[in-house]
Image (cartoon, rainbow, N blue to C red):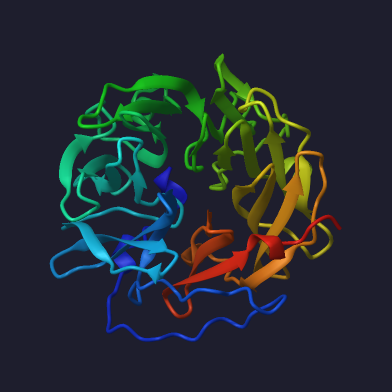
Length: 402
């Protein structure tokens, strides 16, 4: 997982907070709508998750004696006051595998951070915390991965349940076992319920892609990996035993592309977006299910390779009723643009909306998209200014059918 990634926690450098200029805006005028997050210069590894009438944003920054995991709530009044969840002498993060705070079905907050091994930065565990007083205090729950093996564990996603949250993650315990001469076992996908305690984990898939994000709703989605290194998007759940392909793209690639899928769900509607480069043609695709993820409609092409325009993926997706809005990093001649586009279950595609120029390098991270009070809120990192940016776009302003 971590072998192809850049460790960012070592780059966190906190200096006095400065007000950085908003990026030049592209598109119809009143779209930017909110201030940048109240995070310091040098903040990295951001994650945006939904809460009750609010959104929860986390990031990493340099603390007084180590690395801090910080969080802040965004509601109708704007950004709240940031607070520290935990400060550790060492904390691992990279541009794709980041910590998070999420709201459980029991009303508690749950957070995780990645604890690197002293023996190798390529090995790390998932440490969990819980708060029952809206983040004022946090209790350590222990380690999410229950193998006790120095290996890679990360890319955690969550779905709330009545007892707290159900967590899904990539688990590298088998990668430390030699299954043939010079060949170690594959990465796996595991799950566990987390509440007042962490329950024992169960295996979902024993062979998956090494470093692509997972996503959870009523189903869990992830990038699979066949023995022939076909790395398409699979899912599990929805009342159907076992695992199954979302769509057979046929992308065969030796090595992890670090470009996982995204999911959102409301009622019986489930929307998924993903990136593929099957047949050497990069595409951003999305599909919608109206039966709780049991079946999906045909993939809708959001963006694809056209001459010098080659989408880079880094997708996210949110639902607006029975329609969905997809975010992704478009790219033309190495000039990136963060874009949004509306789709429907019937296959209709709206006009793309350009949110902002965006650096195409790893230090810009993955844009995070959520919905709050009728607006699509998106957070990304500006590596030149070394700050987190945010935009809030009215959902009604994101293009309808072309």
